[in-house]
Image (tube, rainbow, N blue to C red):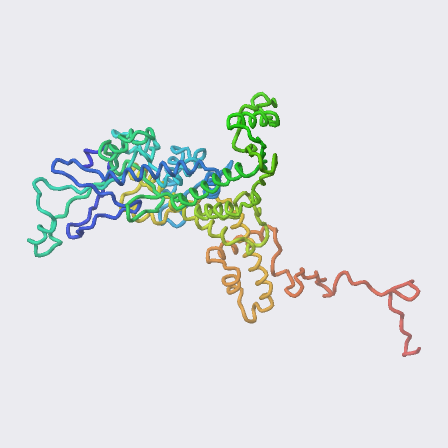
Length: 559
């Protein structure tokens, strides 16, 4: 069936044995399964409702990303996940846990560097990650030379998420009219039933995401388009799925309600302030016993006489008189008949609580929490604390773990591209890749000050604890216990540090511990090898200071 599809397909050399059957199709880890029914002639019917929902959701996500608060939150997440540096690449492949030869590791690193060059990841990493985060999915077409597939991937071409969708199709055999239940009734063992083959492919419709008003393109997007083989497309999703509707969601989905509430509150606040901010006056004009027509004319004359409407022209910078227009924010002029209190002017006060924005702050914090960004980062309030890690808010710790999960999910894109590249170049086999993929990691460049503070404080606490336990080393604790339990050094770190210490002692960079007095920590004093006394010890002089020789004793013990 793969020959009828556009693109290429990588077949497994060892398919499952016929005894390993199941009515459940292989699970798709990227998104919910989108099933389609198949006719006798290979035609398929798509789930139109699912497609239209996905189309509308992606469109809404992109509109949300243009909102200032949402854009700020997205930029915080992208900047934490993708760190751009002048010298280092944003991501590198880590093969320390891979059990393979150095030659294979070198080839894997070379091919991964080739994939990053095809993506131009050093320059476009921020845009690629942002598109994936906003849409909740990303598609890349892996273009190869069909005549020379062993040359690997030639180009990685980005595909708009609105023009692509993933589909799984159950193929019916020609002439098969019975339902599954009727067929299973005639079998003694249900596992003897020849379950239908599952075909996985993508549908590309270039008309699906043209214009907002093109509803026909949206409706025809599910049943029309180009079928592309699954192996020819790199498909990476957010991992969030609406299980009820079978739709892949973006991380922006749960912030839709919070954003709409914030917009309505802000619009209501603007309207209220514009209408209640100025103080307006109410003029009660005494019209006496004048008829209605003349009373209205008299009221207009008084208005024109006392009105003072100066407007500012923003284009020319002039201040001019504009009395012919009356806005809703101006004063009120009301007639009053004879017998009343006569002409009166009263003042209508403006709004008294215009400075209260508590509700705005509430919904803004709610929006930031829905976007998984700490509210402390809102408007740059609070600043960053360079003190102890214990003073860091728990929200920052949660945010760091959230970014780590996003990185692991985004790494599936590199995994799929690397798999295709290695298999096409016959560097590894599909069986080898299944075993190796679990040990291939992707190391993103870190720029998290919180992690640095945490590591620094942990090291400081360990060194202080080791200093406290130093008098008991050799009495209650061994050196090995201190290094493993207090300093938390692994076996490899102990071997590496011992080797480096021996080399530095040999080079004279650090003193030999055998020459250091353990009680004082100072080097031992040098001794005179002949006498055994300190060379620097001076002899006592005579009283008169004339000689240092001993006096001659008299014979026979005479004094």
